[in-house]
Length: 105
Image (tube, rainbow, N blue to C red):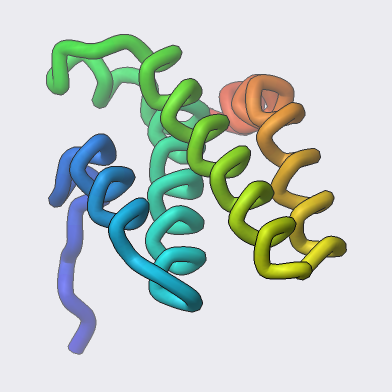
């Protein structure tokens, strides 16, 4: 049986701050989750931002920041290929959001 879990279960700012305090794989996992959830909200569910009383751009900014932090952390950890991938995702986050918005019914 699968649990019904809301993507807004935890505020993304809190997820972001908790991720920054972690190390290793836990840090990467936390920042990835933060970036992905923020990207989904800003791209697929912008109407959810009204209930949260913030703009879709707020989620896009958290997404970018998380991806840039992932890039920096991977660079520091000498994981250069991953660092470049996360850097590219951060730079392209707005474009990805626009694609997601076009995919909505």
